Image (cartoon, rainbow, N blue to C red; front, side, top):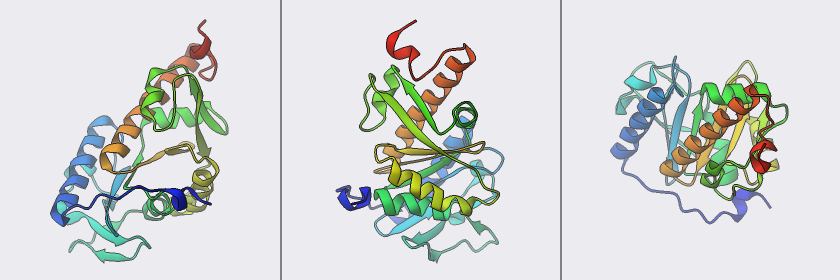
Length: 225
């Protein structure tokens, strides 16, 4: 039985105008964090059976509500901007998390911390003994927290199958890393997804710094030096 089949999460229902503004506000915040610079990164928010997502290849800090695409849970476009903007290349990956985890929001970050984490770990990111682990749903500080890493592809949409397999294969994770690329993070609603992403980014940075100090993040903090 898949994670989606056992989920009891109720997705948040937002007014159309509120959902559009929220995507813009969050993209602006992610730009300021360095997660969505140079037209990369983005977020999608589910409201009932509709998914609101930022377009592809745009300056995320300058998005307007009428730039937002609306799709159904199968990826069919329900509403699109009047301009020549293109729908996000992340669409099939966002939809995978909605389908498998019954998520309420999914974001994609190009954070340097997430990219460096994929360079320093092979098959999965691992860390233990860091208080921020408790911010990740279902995890505690005394265990080894893992995030699967999948290999990057030339075209974003080609990652969908590998991402789906990683989500199914790691039922406790709220994120999947893409080597040399970034991370996908989801949550039960936009606030939960944002909080998960912030906690993960902190943990990625902590692990990178530990590695730079010659320490193993999967053992060092849990037992002390």
